[in-house]
Amino acid sequence: MAELFDMGKHTWFVWGSYAVFFIFIVAELVLLGRRRRTIWQRLSRIKRMNSGDNNET
Amino acid sequence: MLAIFHTILARELTLGLRRKADVLMTLFFCVIVASMFPLAVGPEPALLKTMGAGIIWVAALLASLLSLERLFSADYIDGTLEQMIISRHPLALIVFAKVVAHWLTTGLPLVLISPLLALQYGLEVQDGLVLVATLLIGTPILSLLGAVGAALTLGLRGGGVLISLLVLPLFVPVLIFGAAAVDDAAAGLVIEGHFSLLGAMLVSALILTPWAVASALRISIE
Amino acid sequence: MNINWFKYASPASFYPLAGKMIPWFAVPAVILAVIGLIMGLFILPPDFKQGESYRIIFIHVPAAWMSMVIYLAMAFWAIIGMVWNSRLSSMMATALAPTGAIFCFLALWTGALWGKPTWGTYWVWDARLTTQLILLFMYFGYMALHAAIEDPRRAARASGLLAVVGAFNVPIIYFSVQWWNTLHQGASITPTKSEMAASMASVMLIMAIAAWLYSIAVTLKRVRCEILDRERHAAWVAELSTEAK
Image 1 (cartoon, chains in turn green, purple, red):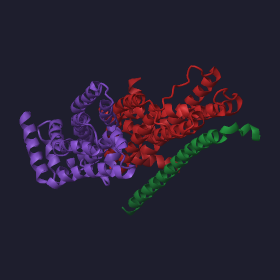
Image 2 (image 1 turned 120 degrees about the vertical axis):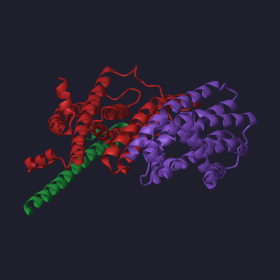
Image 3 (image 1 turned 90 degrees about the vertical axis):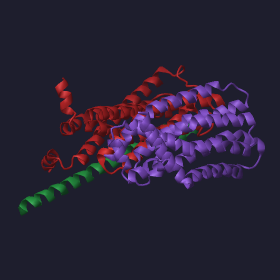
Image 4 (image 1 turned 90 degrees about the horizontal axis):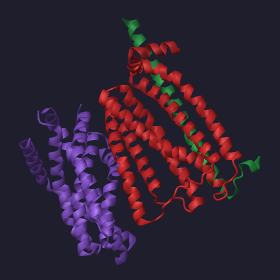
């Protein structure tokens, strides 16, 4: 297994590129998911507020 | 058409010359920035001579950047800009007059002071003249492109820093050809090509940017 | 056909369509990326000249391509948004920017790590690298302008105009930087396209297609967020949130 990941004298360069690449892609997806969740939370808050108004009238 | 251009130009120039401190500030900023480099890299005449044109160009570029925020802000705050937008005259023409006035009060002084800076860096007389000529063609392009950034960032928090971020990448071609013309002149090469490229950039900026600035102002004012 | 296009130009009908489209791009992107990575990292033999470091190319080249393509796509949607005054188009432009900026940064990062073993230095003022750096600044400028404006309508239109002005400038910047580079005769890199083996080219193509599909999927996902954010008071969004509950 270890020799599979061995890139000769270029290990740092190859895995450094790939690692940062995937960190950024994963970070993009995580941030996007977080943004989606906060938007939905805000939407349900707006909806609760609106339904509250309806009950009063 | 021409009448409104003249009116706006005269108004802007009167206003600009009344605020002498602003004009002088831009000028001093350029001189101070250019004077910092020898202190940082050392006073060797040969080194300064090779770096001179580039440094003076960067200093002029930063100085004209500094003055961009003022281009529309006063008119924006007192509502004049809104009047200009709803007036029956073409907005692009009004904008063009404003940019010309802005260049006359900030760009032209920079061009006029540049021989002094060229002297500081020990440039030859002909190279100094080439530098003045490149700045004469180049600084109007900076004012025109900068006006787009100024119009887009109108009334925003941290507008000044934001303008630099928007506009500096667009300044790159002008900087490259302006500084390279002086270097090539010093090396005894033909520099007509540089001037025709700078001229082409100036003509296309003159034609295209007033429309871009006008639509940016409409976006910002709405 | 025409009617369909205009129907989907409204955010309310595009929102569910985008949701349905995402898996069609995301799943092939993952499959192709996995195939490309296994081939590129483990199966292909080391290059006889560059050794193992050439494997970086499989992510570097797709990232560089995407960063340019996405900027052009951004300008395209911005123009459409300006001409037809359609909200969805400007939302598309906004949604593309972060992905483009990420690919642009990754192209620079992987380029630096590829450059060190290949030319012996992390950074050279090469025409391609310099243009890529300026492109990154332009992405930052776009996103900074969009973030600085609170009114979403003005933000979309102002940053759209900036994207169009930038797109006009990208070729000028590229040619001036290239000319500047040949003038100074510093480090000019000749692309090694002719000697590229067929297996290597095919892996690169697989990774490039994966990057395209990924970008489309992520942009669709982000445009959905953008739609919800901007239409949060619209009736159809309120109905949507009741269904989701």
